[in-house]
Image (cartoon, rainbow, N blue to C red; front, side, top):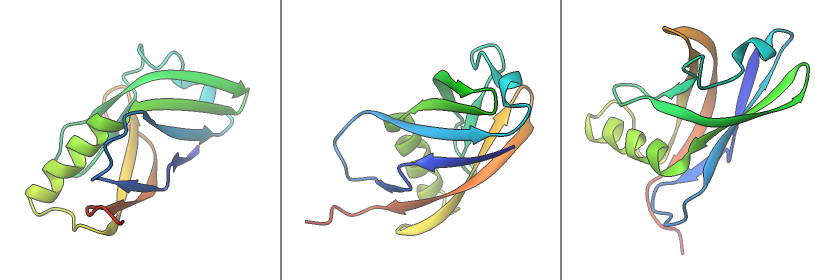
Amino acid sequence: MSFRLTPVILNLASKCGGRVVAHVEGVSVQHLLPVEEHNIRLIIPRASPVPALRSMARDSSKVLICFDRARLIASIRASLAAGVIEADSAIEVALVAEGDALVGTASLRVHQKNER
């Protein structure tokens, strides 16, 4: 399985709510559904996991999994405060299921300042 996140750049200063979407592809992707039963979550180093909100099956090999943007930003801020990740850099985000089974990792670019 593989996955990517949208948006690929997350502005921590943004006041908008919304969601972050994991686009998951692979032959066994349907085994992740429903996300509530499989404890699907995003993991940021040394921060609280971000649980999946809901999912949509695109077809038998593609699933979209939605996460709360504000909760993801809070986890990233905790990791920044702990000095584990650096501001204005790319970070590796893990998508895990039941227990700590790794589904995959994706890169997410983080911007801390409001660029106006």
